[in-house]
Image 1 (cartoon, rainbow, N blue to C red):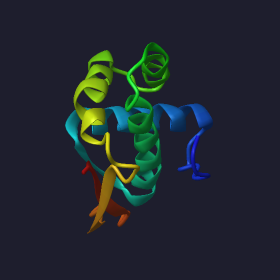
Image 2 (image 1 turned 90 degrees about the vertical axis):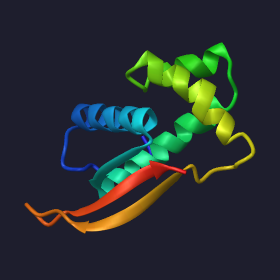
Image 3 (image 1 turned 90 degrees about the horizontal axis):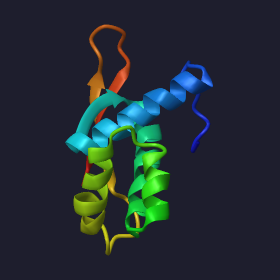
Image 4 (image 1 turned 60 degrees about the vertical axis):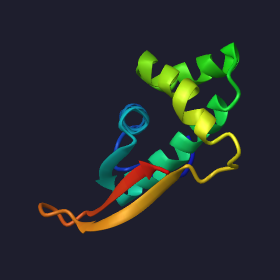
Length: 113
């Protein structure tokens, strides 16, 4: 797991939450979440895209072990990763949008570039 942010959750809950967020980001291309979650999701998403740049069985199994939907994995290998073939990183952009109304948590939008 990259980073040392615990996000106020147990290890299993944190891992499940980050897997879901990475899956939703790869599926939709853009999600709205808190700043600290976005920073963690960015590092994990960029690792998945870097792995998917080389399309072989081993890499597909590595990504399938983390991403929760098979159709998102095929989309990652067939559509998303080829777009970044000549890029060495920086696949995600985080844009801060201000505090959340209920608890004033800093919110941001993370999207694929």
